[in-house]
Image 1 (cartoon, rainbow, N blue to C red):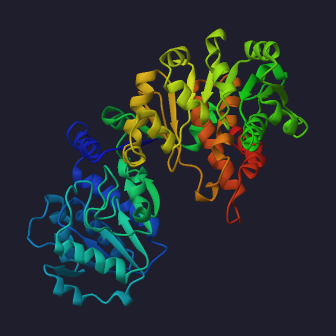
Image 2: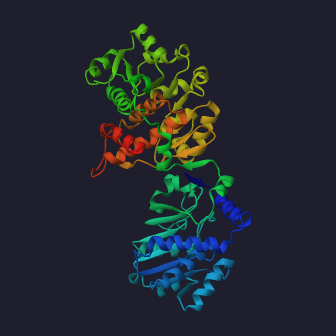
Image 3: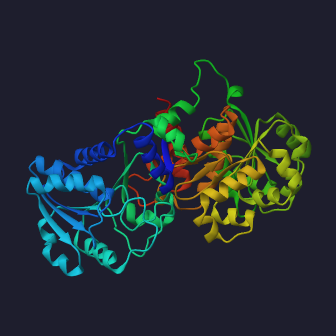
Length: 496
């Protein structure tokens, strides 16, 4: 499990390691340098390292020393308008001077003329770390622009200089890294839409701070790893029958939105549900009854059959493709069905959010799966507000309503109001209609297979994204039916 932290929490983590665990700061710097060098030593021969005057710059100096000892050609560029260096920076600087390292000092923009970019395979950015909280001044802005303009391959150490680690926003201008190596915790700003074009490929490295120290300084935001999902996904026993894997009812589909119902039901079936029943209008049922070979279909107007089916269900998923008034009536009768779990999506979200009694019924038993536009309607705020405050918005809504919220989008946010998890699977090739319906079906199926609310939301987002990655290999884009075709394979790979 990876920790996601704000800049303040990262500073507190370092302070805790130094003061409470008595790990000298220079040791942490040495460990950071060793990790970076191990990653790049076989990739480049001619390197230029841009160093600020703080400890991020000190990391760069230690990296330079280690590369020089490996007989690499290294130029160190120290960027500082004043000689205000940190203690650990000076330790490494003095060593470099004694071994006659090639050092260039930049005190004014004109000094950039000392650098010939064509000599180097890569530029390493060690100018600013997690402490940056204001726009770069003209001096630093022009240096960042020089680096971006003149180097195709740029590596940022811990933070692309110019990025706010809390918001991901560009502080005037910022380094556009091809790769960012960050230490111990993913910075909170890296899950923001703002930072996508600047962090490049992100890798998390350990510099010797124990997990216990991260627990103490945790802000309750995490990103699970593949081994974590393997532990969560229930294993199938040698002997089981369909009743062991859940009875799922899906209330979905309207005229013109038949596909939403089909995708949800089919995704539910392919995710391992024991029995799946699609409850829809007669129009939708007539179209899909033959196409859904492994699921049952039911006309919503057959009230007695519908009532019996819902009573016998473990999970009820409601919302994909719902635009007809008839569905509102059945939604408002869910208090007749005790001890069910609910997945609420699309057209059903507004119905639930506007009826306090319905929300009380599903508390501790419901998962909401809005996209940013739907979330904005739920809280009566602009979409831009939701996208800028995704974690806070989802967490607050989940807490207030005692539900799990899965806020869809890049780096999907999943929260029960206490802890927050960020999903890291999927890609932009999945940006097409029906993806949310597919996710709803997967989550409903996982609930039916006796995963908890949080486990179902976490696994659902992860499986959905992995299936999308698999489906889009060697393709320009992927559609929902491609995802469905890969669900079972992805789940089998996880279970292994």
